[in-house]
Image 1 (cartoon, rainbow, N blue to C red):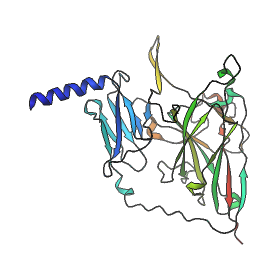
Image 2: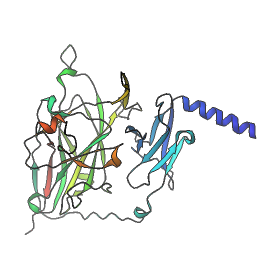
Image 3: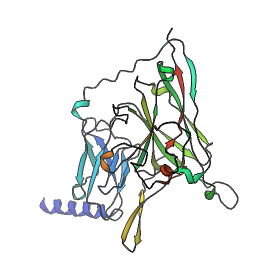
Image 4: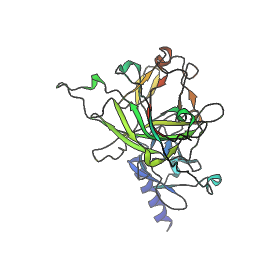
Length: 324
């Protein structure tokens, strides 16, 4: 039996040297946790796919000794690479086990209203999407009346530099996730949210504004507003499945090896046309996922901020229920 144990352990360690798919599951239900976050503790990380699976190997991530798993509604979990198993189980947070989500459906007469999106085609004034960043835009009730968001309008930019010799845009397929957050007293998004999220795919055939229908989510704007965020998860295969690929690369420089995050198409145009500041950003694998207002305090060297383009012009369509 001892020999069998050591042989099994040896085979497992050999397998870790190769690419291995790890699945993240709920401790109680044993169901996969879709799109869970995997942080490597070095400011980088990746996401599981819709089946809770991601690919890991020591050869692929040579300097990673520990993995940190997280997902909304679950307690964070850290695991040493030496203790990594084919399945990782997350426990639901105790303070959320008995939470009941009540969504009062708005009824009666309503009027359709819009908030116009603001975009442009200058890719020098764009946010370069990476898996390590999330962008949140605030929406308030329309005219102060009960309001439901039915559609998000996401301006995008398809790079001219990505055209082939025949003048056609090169193919790509990128998965994004939109999530919703309450507004805290200081005006920032809540760290955690029980609002539903939705994934979607944008490719080279997209128009300059991607229209995302979310009426089925029944997102009613609270009195103090709500944030809608957009976050890239990675490229997908022809079947629309998230590709299990490394989300950054190492570049050798004179001062050592520098990790450079993969940037994804399409780009997100930022604008200076919005009064005030309503865009917040955060690093998913860094600084405890703290939200920061996108201004000079976030990054004084940002070309976007210094040029005044510090807001993402996300638009929306609403159902507004005017009271008599």
